Image 1 (spheres, helix red, strand yellow):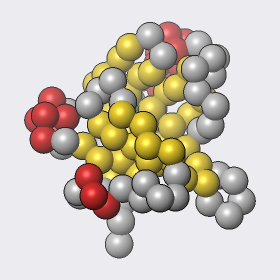
Image 2: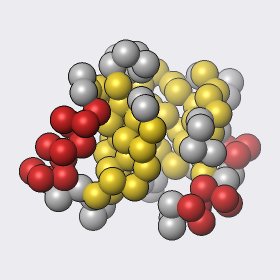
Image 3: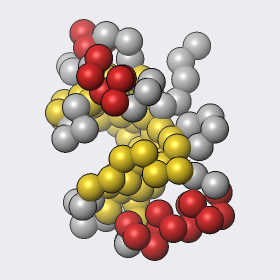
Length: 111
């Protein structure tokens, strides 16, 4: 059985949303840039993604090996944090990101 790595939600304002998730949910900021915030919860991370730069909310499912990314099914993206994602739509149009963390990312994010 696979686990969920993260849930990405579209937000209007990263600063306001970060503050809300910190105060209301007890989330801790673990990565930040101008269009994305990664908030750690006890059991999952929440990715706050700026609506001006991202088209879809999504759930992220980790893969162990880069070769396990289903590149024949979706769009491959090499992220600025060192991860690689493959975005695939389910039968209803919901987006699932299969995500691979290289060894440097795992160490940086303590995965």
